[in-house]
Every structure is written in structure tokens, then in C-alpha cells.
Picture 1 (tube, helix red, strand yellow):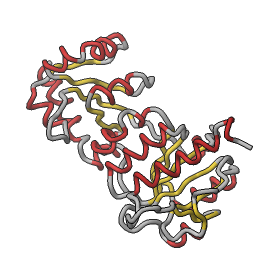
Picture 2 (tube, rainbow, N blue to C red):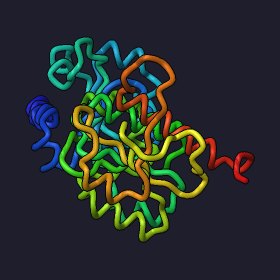
Picture 3 (cartoon, rainbow, N blue to C red):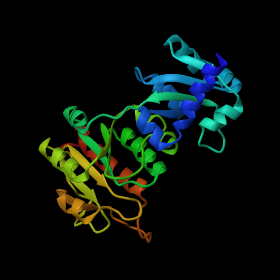
Picture 4 (cartoon, rainbow, N blue to C red):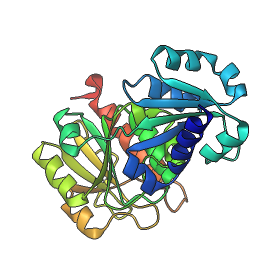
Length: 265
């Protein structure tokens, strides 16, 4: 039994690396919030590891997992630290199956609001925008082009469980995304500080895909040109600009508000 647990722990530790996650089709979700939401998603959690402290503290989640027939192993604090990418590990880690879906599947479900991150470089920002998109009622988040892995530990933690709430599409070429979204009836809006249209007063009640660029370089010119409109968020104070996550929140909530029935004209 100990040899079996050690082998499984070694496999789980490898999931802290992107290549291993890609090959296995699995990732780690750490902490009570992420584990709770993972357990609420059918057939996602493969196994659960918990320290003695976490077994006592999160006994409700341990019971939920065991009732679902999910294997739960009690591990040492040192073993939990090896599975964690945080400074202060929470001692509760789920091995999960990947939850991303093809772009076609996401579009067929016809959400009215989609957030697309083009070549994102910061996993924390990616997770935060995923959480924001979920809160704003978006139905999907697309990570297009080259960029961070949504299953990176920092991204999973920053999503605060939202990774399990909406459709996530991974590594779709930006131009294919734009063409597919437009063919499905979406209006595609590119966010840029040099946008020709200001967010205030923009009609946003139609089904929309928002394009958000790389934190350092923004959107490529060809991506911006391919969108239906380029949009800038107005700056009323003296700040030079908003960071990516803040700009995404402003845009997504503007759409969310416009798409609520009481606000449609």
C-alpha cells in the first residue's frame, strides 16, 4: 500500500509541470474552495490528498469525496508541500481531470458573453479574469494563441473555483477564434488603449466576444484589425492606464449590465 501511494504521489508531483499536465490530461487543485467546486463537477476529481490538519479542518469535503467513491489519502505536511506551489500550503490537494472543451462546443452552447485572452503571460491574471468572467455571467473563457496554462497552480488558485463553472477553451489560434465567433453571430470587440471607440455609450446588448491582449504588449495589430471594433476604456483621472485584469472587469461588467433584460432597449 505504501509503495502504491508513493507511486501515485510521484505522479501527482509531476503535475506541477506544464508538460506533465499536458501529457496526463490532469492538474492539481489546491485548497478548500477549489476542491469544493471540483467535487461539485461530475467526474472531475480523480483522487484527494490531505494532511492530518486538513482531514480535521475540511472533514465535510473529505466526507463528500469518500461518499462519491473518490480515494482520499492522508499525507505528511512535507508531501503536501511538494504538491503545492504556494508559500503556505493548505494541505488539501485534488488531482483533477482537465475540464477544457473545444471552441465549437463552447459556441454551440451560445453564451451571450465570452472573454478571450490572447497570448496571456501571467497565470494570476488569467485566473483572476476567469473568476471575473464567471462573476459577470460569461459562459466561456478562451485562452488563445501562445500563453499561460489555465491549469497552472497560480491560475487555478486565482480562479477561486470558477475554472469549474464555465467553459474553458485552450490554445485556439486568435484568427480562427475571431472567424468562428463571427460565424456564430457574435460581435467581436478588441480592447486597446488606442481603440477608436470609447466604452462609454457603446451598445453592448448583443452576444459579444471580448478580446484582451498580453499584459505587456496588448493585442497584435492584426488581431485588433480583425475585430469588429477596437474599444478603449476611458481614463478620467491621471493614471496612465488600467492593468489587464481591471480593464477586463470593466468591459465584462459593462456587457453583463447591458445584457440584463431590464437594461435592454
